[in-house]
Amino acid sequence: MNVFRSLDELLRRRDGVVTAHPFTLLIGAIGCYVLYGAAAGFFQGGWSLAMATLKVPLIIVASLVLCLPSLYVFSGLGGAELTPRAFATTVAGFAGITGLILLALMPVIWLFSVSTLSLWFVVWLHLIVWIIALVFGRQFLVRSASTARATIGLWLFLLFVVSLQMTTYVRPVLWRGGSEPLFATEKQSFFAHLGDVLNWKAPEAKKPAAETSAPAR
Amino acid sequence: MTSLVFPRERAVLLGELRLDRETPRHLAMLVATIVVCGAIYGAVLGSWHGARLSTYVAIKIPLMLLTTAAVTSLFNWIIAALLGLPMRLRQIVALTLMPLAITAIVAASLAPVTWFFNASLPPPGQSQRTLHNLLYLTHTLLIAAAGLAGTSTLRHVLAEVCGGDWKLATRIRLSWIAAYAFVGGEVAWAMRPFVGSVYLPVVFLREDALRGNVYEFILTDILPHLWRSL
Image 1 (cartoon, chains in turn orange, purple):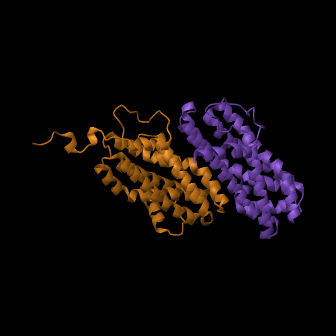
Image 2: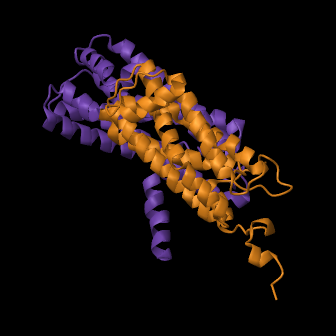
Image 3: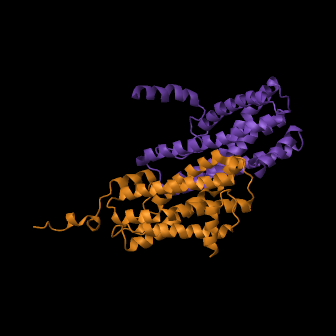
C-alpha cells in the first residue's frame, strides 16, 4: 500500500519535495518497469514475456546504478547541495517518475507489441517512450536540484547512451530465436545492434496469415 | 573531495586559499585527489587493451594532469600578477590544480560507465579500427567535457579570489584556460597511448613520444589529409 501511496505522492507534488522513503519509491519504480517489460514481451509472446519482464527492469536499474556517481558529481558541480538522503530520494523519485510514465504508456506498448510485425518499429517505439520518460524524469530532477539544470541535461544524455549499450549487453530482449541463449555471449556496440535490428526479418511465426497459409481458391 | 564538488564547501576552501591559510594542506589534498581520481579513470580507460595498459594509464592520467599543472603554474602566476592579482606562487599552484582536480573527479565519476562500455564492446583487434576510433573519440569527448566542467569552476573561483572583480577574473581565466588547453594537448600527445592502438603493441610511452608535437601533427598530417579527402 505504501508503494502506491509513494508513487501517488510523486504525481501530486509539483515542488519536487518528496516525503516517501527512497526504498519504497524504488520498489514502486521496479514494479512499473516489470509491468512495462511484460507488455513489451507480447511482441513475441510465450517465454519471451518472462524474458522481457526480467530484462527491462534489469536494463534500467543497471544503467541507473552505473550513472549514479556521475549524477552526484554533476549535480554538485551544478550547484545543488544534496545530502546523501536527499540524493537517494531524488534518484528514487526520478526512477519512480520514469516508471510511472512507462506504466502510463504500457497499454500503448501492449497494443503495438501484439499487432506489429516489424522489430525495428517496436524498437523505435520503445526508444521514443524511453525518451518521453526521461524528459519527465528531467523535470523532476530539475525541481529537486534547480541550480544544476544544464548538468542534469548532460547526465540524462549519458544515461540514455548507457541504457542503449545495456540493452545490447543483455540482448535478446524482445525476440529470441529458437537456439539463441538467454544472454548473447558475443560482445557488440549498440550501433551494430541497431544495425542488426534494421536487418531483422520476421520469422514465419510472426508473418501475417495471408503470407504463411496457402492461397485460397 | 567534497570540498571541491559542493559550492559551499568550495567557498570555504577558497577563502582559506585567498588568505594563504593552510595552503600546503590544501595542495596535498588537491594532488591526492588528482592521483586517486585520475588513477581510477585511467585504470578503466586503458582496460579495453587489458591489465597492462590499464596499469600504465592509471599512472599516466594523474601524471598528465600534474605535468600540465607543473608546466602552466609559472605562466599562471606571472600572468595573474601582471593582470593585477598578486598572490604567492603556492596559492597560484593550488588554484591551477583546482580545475584539474575537478576534472579528475568528473572523470572518475564516469568510470563505471566507461568500464561498462569497455567490458561490453568487442576486444581490440585489427578488424576493430572503427570501434577503436569511436572509443578514442568518446574518451576524448569525455575528457574534454570533464575539463570543461573543471575549468568552468574557475569562473567563480577567480571571481572570489579577485574580490568580485569579474572583468579581471575573466581576463585571468581566459589566459589560464588557453594555457591549460595548449599545454594539456601536448602533454597528452607525448604520453600516448591511452586507448591503445589496434596495430601497435602496448607500451608505456611510444618511442617517438617527444618527436614532433600534436600541433605539428594536426597541421602537417590531419588537416592536409582532410583537405585531400574533401
